[in-house]
Amino acid sequence: MKGYVHALFCLVTVIGLVGMISLSGFSQETEGVATMELKGKIASVDPANSALVVTWLKDATNNVTEDVTVSVNSSTNIEKNEEMIGIDQLEVGNNVYIEYTTDAAGKKIASYIMVGGKE
Image (tube, rainbow, N blue to C red):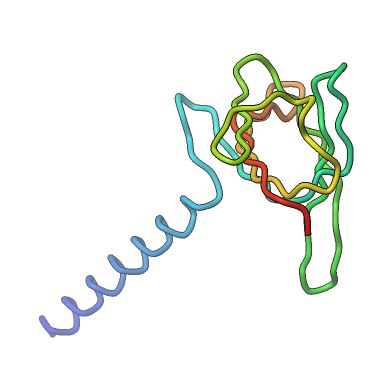
């Protein structure tokens, strides 16, 4: 009986740890604000309004994409080839990795953008 209880305890502990590890890849929480991640391709850039539209693969099985508008501000770090750049240097077609938060109005605000090449 002791062996069964011990095995059950170990199994529950492992499942709990695996669940915590897998969830950490989707968001990070900083002072109560969740930082989300987005990977996709730049569909449009609007430097005048400090925004860009990114197309991401929402459902790989059915090849469904979705456009998401992301805003940038003076705190946003945009990196390309290990150098910091401005929104005016972003190009349609570039692959991007974005970390963002969502404000109370639902606006997505980028804290970090890493720019890759075009495919």
